[in-house]
Image (tube, rainbow, N blue to C red; front, top):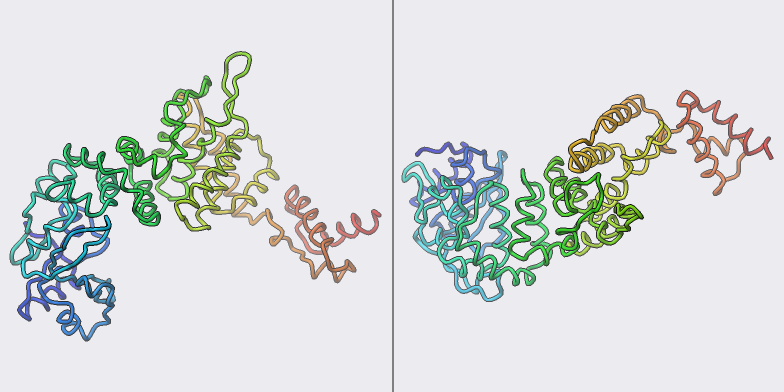
Length: 447
């Protein structure tokens, strides 16, 4: 089989080969090409030593990101390429890194240390595909299987269990029975892995085409208790409500799959009803209600994402989306919509609409999203017409008010808030002279 390698990558392989070394593209790039996907990046493996790689590519900028582990990054205008010396690894004593790394002259040694068969293939145009562990066959069978004994592979790096689940979710493959059994047995050790590494794999799972598959695998292997214990009470939780056909957990997973692969939206989908098991009340007719679950869910999301060491900006976006997700029940007029835009933001408000549409669709078969579609259209009109929804959009500011005789201080903010309310109700009044007259009438003449 012949694979098409980008010219800039092939040039690097040619340079290594012309100087008497072996060189192959390796790992994920080979896997993706066999799957008919365009790789995001390309890695090269070679029998050249790190110093030899640096000398060969002295005309390029190189970055030493792990010279003792054999990796040099060669910077090319069309893309950076990691070039790594064939290596063998010693024992893993900390469930993450090998105790020692030794360089090898054999490509098979390098492939034998890799995690899964689908990632343990190499290719160059001279030899073709080097596949000592059956990666091509596993791709054809749609199977995730470790290289060698799964207990050894997972024992070397416990995060590989999450990577296993991520690949199964991303590619919609099944996990080999022996590999899945070992994942079950070793999952408890994932808590030894740094939260940042766990978070990165978890977030990748959430942005897969069908993220619920990954969540169910995390549940099956016991990893959900480590990664997201907050969702455990939702499993099998009966909503006792005729408007909801699914239990809380399955509703959450339905919403998760129905949202676009935008990280904050997927996270908000995961957290939007997480407060329900803690807020259930049952009325005289036996119908369940969950008053305040949106606010509690937002708080729970914030704490969970802090534990996962998520960036603050992401945490705030998710918090806002979860807190506002129940506003699809509100009958907003234009002023209400503008307040919503002001609270959520002009970009995130459309992510909120996506979350709400998915939430409604996953409630019951008779539910309609027509009112959300109409709301979305009106919000677009408000933004396109540049109708004010925040103070900075007013045609008047604090300096203008001081020129009219108002004193500097908190009163200026009070006046601007009042004027914003006027303008949100009637956009044509957003003119400096008119707003000045309104401010004087209300706050001077009205005294």
